[in-house]
Length: 116
Image (cartoon, rainbow, N blue to C red; front, side):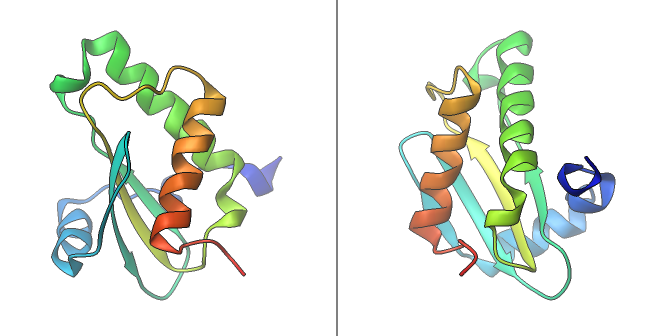
């Protein structure tokens, strides 16, 4: 089960890390998610930002939980060294794990972040 862990080392947590990804100015927009990415050395790291426009606290936390689980289960599909920030749009239709996996795959495909 360790290979599927989503530890603190695989998350973006500091403001300077988020700013580095935003300043790279590589943005991908899909129907449900806006994603910024930066390719560097080291392990893949992901950060989530969910605004209040998405819904109440219960809805926001559910979206974050579903996206984290989708990232955890499919982390071996992403290229090495990718820093990824995900921002679900207001009115996104992520309601279950399969929807989160599909939205994440759509972002990876459009940004060309799949491992070869």
